[in-house]
Length: 190
Length: 119
Image (cartoon, rainbow over all chains, first blue to last red):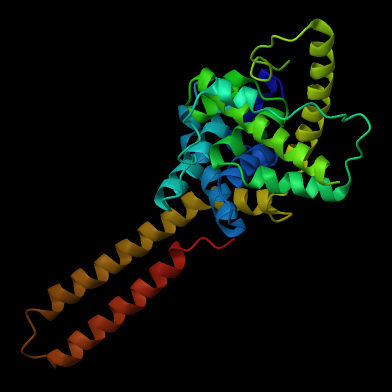
């Protein structure tokens, strides 16, 4: 969605045009669902939190100054609501050891290259990869999803998560390594 | 375009090995990207947007109803007290209090129902 489209949708919502807010929800529902759904495991809670996100968006729409894109702004609201839920439930965003250790070790621990061209990625492998994604810490799961979803830029992810870009890159790097390792294990067992 | 500096921090292999490694990494990245995009998520109702938009847009009307309801209740209690207190000895006071309590409970019940914003 271009900046001018975003602004015209915003104006329609602000002036109370019929179905404008419904269109806004429809437009940003996948983004909100991906952020909240990756942070929070329970489907019922995800639905409730998605509603909460749009309620807050509606309530704070007058505060949107256009300093970032509307998607980034709504994404940051979704992330803060999901993160608050995790804090309330005392669920850590990161595993305790996620930021410990030297990054060089992780790089050297990367799996040996495998011949992926000839590997057939069947449904079972994909299901196992999904399990590996689910086993990532909530923050890394969310960051890697945002990265691959609509090719969100590192800068936008940093704005959404309120983390420095370097930290986002580090989380992304670690998440990819873990998924590559998982993928190599899947191929090894085939 | 993605800033992909997070995927290849550095490498000390020769160019051929590096190219092969990058190709394999690209392939695994592509598969991981597909898996990430297709990873299951809870689904929302088909008419989630429609219902939620209606619910959110109805909030001011409901708030107005609540204010009117609260004002009516306040008027009822004030009127009841203004009339009832000077005539307390003439009234059957337990009956008066019972009626007041029942009215209060009924009102609170109604107010609680009104506050609910069913989806």
